[in-house]
Length: 236
Image (cartoon, rainbow, N blue to C red):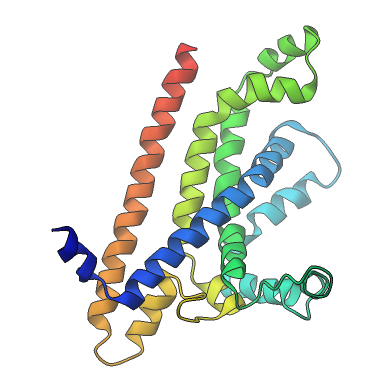
């Protein structure tokens, strides 16, 4: 059974699956700290420019993905404002690399992550944090010991939703890093490539099944883990 499953996908298809998992995992883990910070800022702080920050966070949801990818190329390409500095000073190249695919996926998935965490933060009673502060705890310690445990269900849900979104990202990724087999060809890019050649429909169909299974699995896992964490927090 295991051998049959392994042989069900061809080498190029497995390569796309492995790269997609790698890109999605890196995109989720790398953006999680910033996602928590952005969600906290939007939920708890009042400052000039808050509407602008909220707009920037959610901009990838409303922009065409190709536009987002082009903006990433202009910014992080080798001749971009940031990309040129990264290349010349640190030897880091993101465009047309798997790391660039992770960046594009992270940008597209970021709004979903922030929204889930922000909703969890807004559900926390500020009086609990204020009580900890009156006992002499610093704001950082209050967040670590009080706020973070209470918002864990939102953090888990947001992370898994971001992972699922990153797995399905296509437009921004192909614009920023192209569709290079073995380097930047994720599942959506591989499906597109297979559909462009005669006889590639079967391979594309298999990857569609894998993509649907991974997305549904991520959504179900998000629901299960969020409920478990919520029960643990409630019983603590």
